[in-house]
Structures are given as C-alpha cells and as structure tokens.
Amino acid sequence: MINLPAEIIDGSKIADSIMNTLRDSFKEQQDKTGKQARLVLILIGKDEGASTYSRAKIRRGEKLGVRVDLIKPDESISEAELAVEIGQLASDPTVTGIMIENPVPKHLSFSKMTDLIPFYKDIDGTSSTNQGRIVNRQEFLVPATAAAVVRILSNYPELTKSILTIVNRTPVVGRPLSQMLLNRDYTISVCHSKTPDVVIYTRRSDVVISAVGKPNYFDDEMINPDCTFIDVGINYVDGKVTGDANYQSLVKWVKRITPVPGGVGPITATLIFENLLKAFNYQNLNSGKM
Image (cartoon, rainbow, N blue to C red; front, top):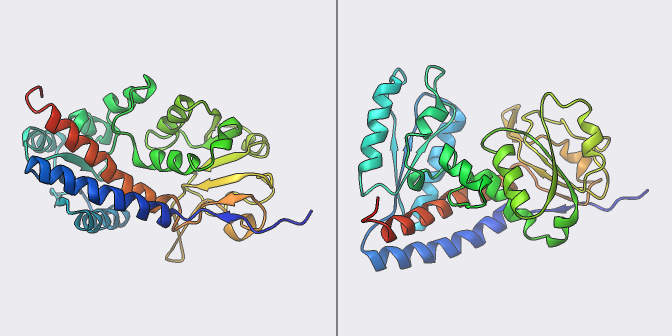
C-alpha cells in the first residue's frame, strides 16, 4: 500500500484566525463598558514549562489589548496563605480571571486551590463547578486544551460519525474532552495507563487523541492509515519539544496529523483568552448578582 503524506493540521493558522476575532471582540467590549479585562496568573515554584507558558500568555495578552499580571508567591506558601490570596483576587472587581499555573509544589493541592476560584473567574476551566457544567451540557469556561481539540475536529464534520479514542483521563484533557465530545454526539473510547492492549482501540479508530506524555509512543503499527491523529503530548527530547507520535513515521502513514510544536498548542494558548472574554462578558452582565 502506497500512502500519501498526511494533511498537516496547522494550529498556528487556526489560532491566528481566533486571535483576530478575539482582538476585535475585546476592543468592542472594553470600549463599550469602559473596563479592561484582566487575567492574573499565579506561578509558584520554578517549573520551566510553567514559566514559559506564563510568559507566552503575557505576550498574547499584549497582542489582544488585555492586561495580564503575574504573581509569584514564595514557593513555601501554605494552602491557608494561598487561599487568602485567591480570596482577595476573587473579590477584586478589577480581576476578570485567575489561573494557577500547574504544576504546583507537592505540599499544595492544585484541585483544592482551583475550587476556591469562583467559576466565572476560573479561566482554566478546571474547577469542580466548571467540570460539572460540562457533564450537564452547560459548558461555560472549559479547559483550553480540550476546547482546542474540539475546535480542530469541528473543521471535519464527517468525523462526528467516526470511531474516536482518547488516550488520557486527566481533568485537563481526557475527562473534560470525553464529555465535550459526547455533548457533540461523537462515539468515544477512553484509554489510560491501566488499559490493557491500547492498540486494540487505536488500530480500529478513525481519530486518535493522545496525551500520554511519552515521546515516540505511537508509530504506524498502532494506528490505521485512515486515522486523524491529534497529538496533545508535550515532551522534551534533547532540548526540543516533541509530541507522543513518532512523527516521521506517522506523517507518511496517517490521513491527518497535528505537529508538535505548532498543532494543538497555539490553539490552546489562544482559547484561554476566549475563556477570558466569556468571563468578562458574564461579569459585566451579572455585576449586581455576584
């Protein structure tokens, strides 16, 4: 069988289109209300990846005309102290959104801290309230990575009738994504580290979404040639960012593929600000009710 090179899904192009729409929408809403949207990032510790993502959000905010502030509490901060800081931000009417950069130091509970953020300021979409809204088909602020995958799939409506497998079950990707896709009538399987013979699922799937966190995990022996492969994995090999796919193998084998970098990542970074716009509009409409 002779396979043509895969269609490479350009996440940067999709992100640029979303950015243009967001820039206009932020300007319109900020001019209309006389207020400025403001995102506060809380970065605890020295994780290189979290620091890089924080800087990227600040740059993206500047392009959109949105204020992004970075708070860096001492690494030894207690949960009680951090709870007080979150409470102050939550009650500040000038703060539109709050994000706690993950990972946090081991003595802190990321999920417990995110649940202290009001659902309408939870720009990460990871609080219990926002996760529950997804399950109840009342999506509001949703995890941006999951939303990025949904945005990619929306460009291929024929895939709604496909067999789809997610290889991840975290609260950031697999769990919310599975519910969001069920809300859109996809038929899905969810695999994880305890799933025996993952290949049984991935070989039969028309779409595979991977967030395994293992470089070169997927090759042509695990995927069928008609597959659309969406690579959410972020790995560092020899100082370079790579996904979960053996990209050089799959790009000659599958039907479509997202590269890493340049695939899901740029869309994710942009959709964080789509959440911020939703939060900004919600808070302006409900200012007397919160």
